[in-house]
Image (cartoon, rainbow, N blue to C red; front, side, top):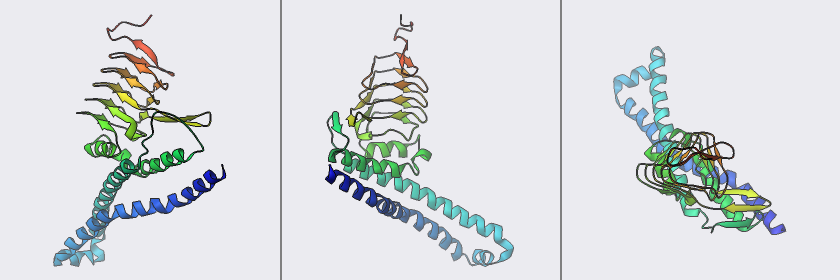
Length: 250
């Protein structure tokens, strides 16, 4: 498919300057804060005198460092929020199913994932927090009350539903997509109320995890797996190790 290759290469060439523009625009609030802090310090004549004196070099560097730190934090938060907005705006509305890997629908999906990659510059430092939750909500995820997300790897957020009080452990990965046999497989992931997804675990597309269920740390839940309410699953691939009534499966 010659036209596919041409479009793919063209978009790849556009990604780098596109990233640069988003990163640059996101730096505007941080740059403003940086220069405003320095400007406020310079308004004080006594402070301005010691800033220009070599005798107070440490203090001068400390003030500049604080201004830079505040600016970087503002840049990072702005970058994450803008990436969430753009990711939610441009996310593909693909129905669950299989799509040819070399297709324009796949290009659309890959383009939408660029915004998540941009957010990863700073998102790992903002989870768990309301800012991280806001990012995923802007990206299209359906979040219940009291959700705690301690991971920067909820991929395809627009196809992920988290119920009330769900806890996502550190570095857990939730994918609503995978590629196999030359196809892009898309299927939503739904996690019920009070479920716990352990640290470093992997949830594959099409999985449904019931209320109060537990996925143990570093478990890998295969695609289209249904975990019933209250059960505990562990291992690679994940299997039930404790039923909802507390007994072990036969």
